[in-house]
Image (tube, rainbow, N blue to C red; front, side, top):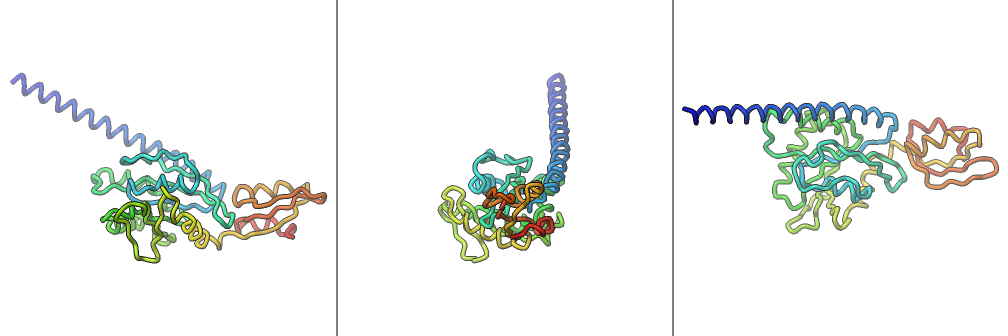
Length: 261
């Protein structure tokens, strides 16, 4: 009887340990939700277009982000390596600045009690201007995974957000795609990255305008929206003011009306 009692105690301890772990994770998710809502507010202020990378874990989203923006995201070949979405500024070939967001990776057969928590970490995608669905080009299950990705995105009210499909890791053996709508990329070799940037530019082109302005020296504050929400491609201090060439968001165009050259 004593042994059974000890076993019962161990089971009770294990159960307590599991509950403590669940509570700790729930707390961590709540904390992340708070941090994410703060970062969403900060993002709304910068008003840069948002591009989200979405897909299963281990398809190379973080490597893709690092290849496009320069290294900084920890690339880990493991589950949930990116539990908190990371965002970085990316300047497209047109000069438009966008915010690239690396979301949490999907996992197959997620335990039911984790699905809701997991969904909340993906709500980032609902704030995007473009969603880039990333799959592993050499994974035989890539199409089914993209279907699941789409189902989750649709359940988060992302149905009307433009989507691009990328088969990453195309340098691996067994990677094929004959579909012209699917971009083949390799974060490792850099293959296909310029094509991806061009596609993003095309999808977002109606959001920005390229302008040339001459700002009088008492209006230099107007350079800020161009620097923060667009990008400056050329600048020159002239006797009559600051000459700037660059890209601005369409909503900011009215600020420069009197200074266009």
